[in-house]
Length: 302
Image 1 (cartoon, rainbow, N blue to C red):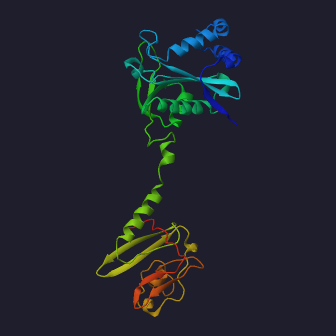
Image 2: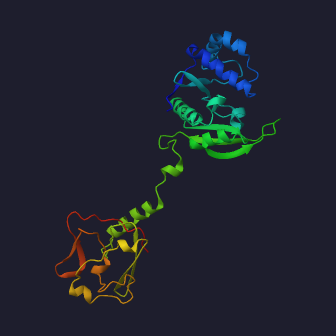
């Protein structure tokens, strides 16, 4: 189980931090880092990183940045760098956020967690959206960004390189979340159900209700003639109303696709065992629902 926290760089993690950079170099990464200096002068490095957070003390020509380390049970997992403001150079390639995961902990979900925690830090800095870029060949980083609702904008070719950079934007506004858009979208069937219920409640015409969204109805009206056409993926679940009234018997339609004996207006309302309907006195066309009867939506109407 992952028990990750995002911390400010600290001497507390000196040894595990050094081990991680040995892994990087064994994989041909971060080769410009002097491991001896990293081990002996980490305290000076951390003090310098702290000065780079303040625009007043940042080195000339550089942008302020904030480094954060991802720690899981005292183990150094990765690093995230956040730039609250970016210039034209980082707008083209680099973006607001950069991150790295030690090789032995890749493909274990840490990258997605690191970026998600980093996006919270970006919100704390008042950003409403952030730009991230990655090499087009870096499939792992691409998946991490997309898992955090990254929206692809375009690919650019930095000067002097052969690999294109993919540019992604992530919205941080209050109405958005890091949840993928596919998970936030309501099913189309549910939207149709809401629409059908809304329309049915706005009309005084005869309504057709079913007790399962497995049923759908098509309503047609012409020359005071009404017909309710039903279909179901599970027709065996459709139970006709028992003992239709004599007034309903005279209203049967020979073309009723339900093809139940005595199929009339009453039998074209389906219900489950234990749920009953009855007619309003003097109004054979209207059916009242007994207490406890729920009105499920019509999932299709034309």
